[in-house]
Length: 446
Image 1 (tube, rainbow, N blue to C red):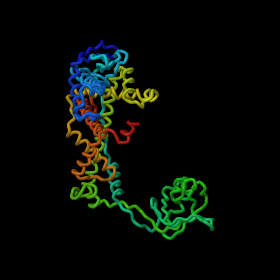
Image 2 (cartoon, rainbow, N blue to C red):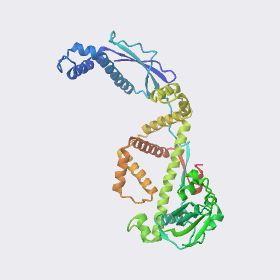
Image 3 (cartoon, helix red, strand yellow):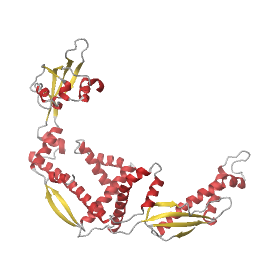
C-alpha cells in the first residue's frame, strides 16, 4: 500500500493511499473460500458451490470489507511508524477520493484528512511560584470532631419532657370539624423544624399526656411539611387552615454517646485507644491527614492552572476538530457544539500537556497505583456513611468491583496520572509553604 502525505497547512495534512491488488486479493480469496465452505445455496451440497457463483454473489461485498479493514490497519501503522502526533482520528476526504467502481477497478485511491498536534512546552520551572497550604488544626476542630463522633454513635432514648431537637409521637386531630375531622394516629412531629416561634413555644417543656393546640400551616409554612405530617396530598394541604390538637404519647431524644472506651472502640477499633487523651490525639491526626489531602487537591488545581496558562496561546486546528466531533457524535447539534466546544478545547489542551509531561518525567501508571487509589476512594465513601474502619479485605474487594466498570477505571487512571504529574512539577516549580486557617482555606475556593 502506497502513502503520500501532503504539505502541512493550518496543522492539517492529507494522507493519500493507493490500494493495489496485492494488498487485498489474498485475504479476499481466503474469505470467499470460507464462505464457500459454509454457504447454503439450493441445488448445491455444502462446500460444493462453484467458486464463480460465490464470487458473483459475495465478491464485491467481501472486497469492500477487506479493503476497508486493511485501510484502517495500514493507516494506524503509517501514523505509528512515522511518529505522527495526531488529534482525533483520520477523516475521509470525499473531495480528493475518486469514485469507487468495484466492477471495473482493481486499484483504488483514498484520501484522509489528519490533524497534527501543535508544538508546545507545558513544563514549569522555578519561575512558576506556587503555594502549598498547611491547614492549621485547632483544638476547636478536634472538639467538634469528637462531639461529632459522640453524636454519630449515640442512641435514641425515651424522654418525659420536650427539649430542643426531640421528636414527638401522638394523636393529631383537627379542631372545629365535628363531622369528619382529619385525624392521624401515631403522627410524628418535630418542633425543631417549625418556622413560627410562637407555635414552637407551645411545645417547649411539654410532657407526655399533654394536649397541645397549634396551627400546622402557621407552624411550618410549608404545604409539603403539612402534607407529610397529615399523610395527605400536597394539593389538599393548601386548604388546611384549621388548628389541630396533638396529644403527646411519646418523646424521643437523641443522646450522644459517652466519651469512653466504648466510643473509642466504635471509632478506631478494639484496643487501639488507651484513653481520652489518646483518642483526641488520633482524632487530631485524622483531621491533619484529611487537611493534607485538601491541601494536595488545592495544589493540584494551582499546578493545572499554571500549566494551562502556558497553553493559552497554543493554537489547535479547530475546523478539523469541530468536524471530528460531529463525525464521532451523531446526535451532536451545531448549537450544542458551539456551547461545548470551548470546554472541549481546554480539555484537549490539558490532555496534550499531561501526556507531554508524563513522557518528560517518565511517569507511568502501574496496576498497583490504580488499585491503591481505588481502595482510598472506597475508604472515603465508607467514611461518609460513618464506617470508619472497614476491613482491608473488604475494601480490596469493593475496589476491585469498582475497577470492573470502564468509566470508573478510566476516571481513576486519569486521577492517578494527574497526581503523579502534580508531584513531578512540585519538584521543579518554586513552592512556598504557608500556614492557613481552615476558614481562610475554604475562602480560596470561593
